[in-house]
Amino acid sequence: MGERAQVVLVTGWPGFIGRRLVRRLADRLDRSRDRLVIFTRPRHVTAARAELAALGVAGDVVEGDVAKMHLGLSGVEYRRLQRHVTAAWHLAAVYDLGADADTLRAVNLEGTRHVLELAQSAERLTRLHHFSTAYVSGDRQGVILEEELEQRQGFHDAYERSKFEAERLVRRAMPELPATIYRPSIVVGDSQTGEVDRFDGPYYLAILLVASPLAVPLPLPGDGVAPLNVVPVDFVVEAALSIGSHPAAIGKTVHLVDPAPLSARKVYELIAARAGKTLPSVTLPHRAVEALLGLPVLERLVRPHRNAIRLVNHLAIYNCRNQLELLAGTGLACPPITSYLDRLIDFVKGYYAAPPRPPALDELDDPLDRPAR
Image 1 (tube, rainbow, N blue to C red):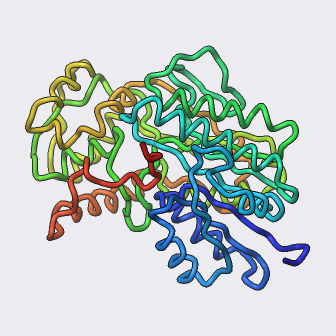
Image 2 (image 1 turned 90 degrees about the horizontal axis):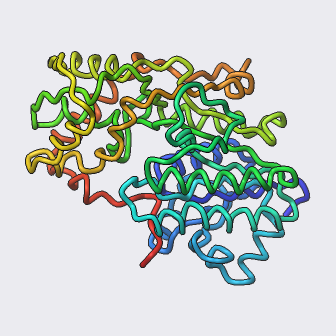
């Protein structure tokens, strides 16, 4: 390898963000000298190799498991990464709010610890890019700053806690390690095509309830005055790549959020109107709505969303000064939800209309994988 060659490692393929990130990295690399290394689980190795070939970029597929020491790699494989990796994008995580605490801790926390150990020993590393989440803020309300992390907050679930503890590891390593932390809010489909790989969270709950064959006019949980902060996946990837190339982003935490989100009620009303339906004016306590969603006719449809309903009424405002400063002059900005809402709804409608019917929501494979049990 030439002295100036970049060797970029990506974990979390073939996750929704990870797939797109790999494709965009391939566009940015010098194909005459740079290499892309996809770290993935064993069952995805063949597909990952096909992806590299289709992209026409030099690279390697590394089979391992972030939850294991040395990432489950042989000594030879691990030392090769230590010698050559110049940048690491760490996206591998379990995002399923219903996953058990042990799985979440193994992948999200210990997986980050193992990636950090590799980064700290990598001889040529210029940047570690760590994907966290805006919801490390837990149960905090009010304005949440990018610089803040440990504020004595509680957590709604084991997912939030595992991501908080993982980010804390990265922050503690930052004085000696060039790293940037990205905190996306609720990542939704592509703003141009509407494409998304799975429907979960309070935003897609709203779309499913008005676009699915079950025309059940559920009331909004609570009053819905809290901002519902969503970001399209294409903005998340482009913003992270732009920010990641900025020297001033080293040591920074960046909220990848909508600077001007609409309230949850307004978003739900827009979705209902687009579907020719009316959102009931009555509101119910969110616990009552959770109980309603437990009815047999609805439970299977919305099972992935029940733990996320609380976000509809969680009054947190994510300040994004770092995002705005680091993207200034690039032409990149989070598009308003009103500019791409129709595409998202059309994609969901197509999901239900397309024959043969896709797998049920609870049958969808988690693209970011859980470790084998």
